[in-house]
Image 1 (cartoon, rainbow, N blue to C red):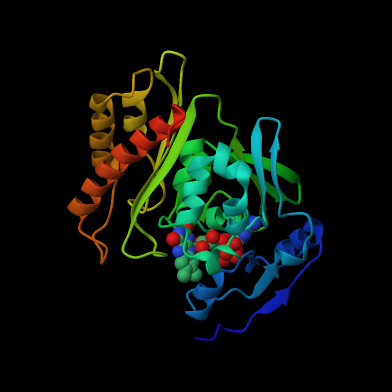
Image 2 (image 1 turned 90 degrees about the vertical axis):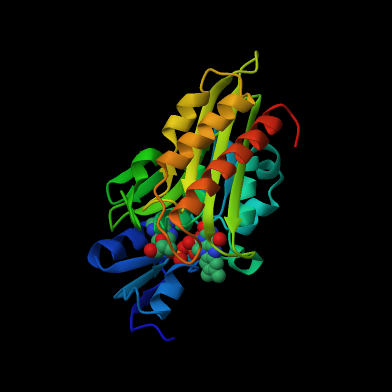
Length: 290
Ligand SMILES: Cc1cc2nc3c(=O)[nH]c(=O)nc-3n(C[C@H](O)[C@H](O)[C@H](O)COP(=O)(O)OP(=O)(O)OC[C@H]3O[C@@H](n4cnc5c(N)ncnc54)[C@H](O)[C@@H]3O)c2cc1C
């Protein structure tokens, strides 16, 4: 498949990229191209101009700074996968990165692009909801920080303006006794999720849940937070009873469609099971196991 005609620009700085976006409201930003290029090839997207960020230096960083993991706009999935910091301190992010597509896609795909694309089937949105991450949007007037709960606005829709660039993702550094896990069911390796569940939690000194975030992938028009499941566990010891309750709430509160990956009933049951398994793994990791 051949994309429709488009103009191509590869600016060397953020201000130059912003100027191009402002003067071309139909332009699209290109980062890893792993979602945009296939859409253009199928002519599901026909942007008049592509603003390629890949010539802008200094955007591919990963920094543990001021209580946040800061991830630049051009940081690739493969960098997250290769990072000892991510593997050891952010196991939920590590699990999620490993579950995205395949190594070839991960060599190009960026976390920022994964979030900006806002495909409900993408894996990182649920994980960022579980972490209560935030993103930095850069526009002509400077930077604004958007809490992740305000970022996703529906199917392929975010609160980014068309002339803003998502320049940084910020994940709060987990406190001691924290753990996280991502559980995804896919039809075959590299596929999008039939359903996925992300859990991040922190236990207090007595072993009770003092922080919890649960996000769900591909069971709604956008990534969803399982708020009643979170509430069921907050302040409690994460026993089998409360984990089961949390699973049942997630089953009731997700909103999947029937498709080739399964019926509504199947996906709801899958969410229940994945929620319980992700919780069990996150608790084990918070206790220093797994
Ligand atoms: C074979 C295959 C399998 C895949 N499997 C999975 C999977 O299992 N899980 C999963 O989550 N994803 C999967 N994907 C999708 C893809 O990996 C992600 O959507 C990808 O991470 C998007 O990032 P990108 O950098 O490639 O974005 P691009 O394709 O460059 O851009 C995607 C969209 O985001 C916008 N955008 C990109 N960067 C920015 C920015 N910095 N600021 C503002 N807007 C921006 C673009 O304009 C475009 O609309 C798969 C893709 C392929 C080709």
